[in-house]
Length: 58
Picture 1 (cartoon, rainbow, N blue to C red):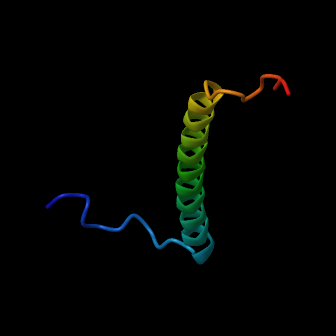
Picture 2: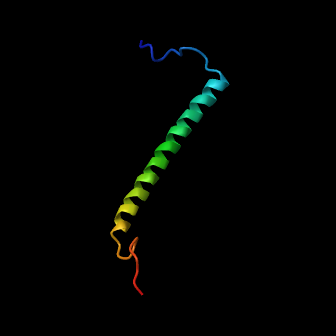
Picture 3: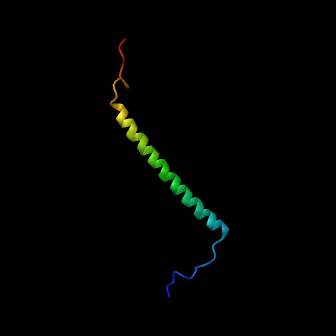
């Protein structure tokens, strides 16, 4: 029999909650980083757009 089948010890509700919050934070940070990368890529493609950041004559 392997040692994986035997529980190490009973986890408290606080530990379970902490682990759940850690996982949620990690997922949230990954999502925010992905959003930031998309925005940054969008900004780079918009920088070459005509008229953006340049003075317009008229």
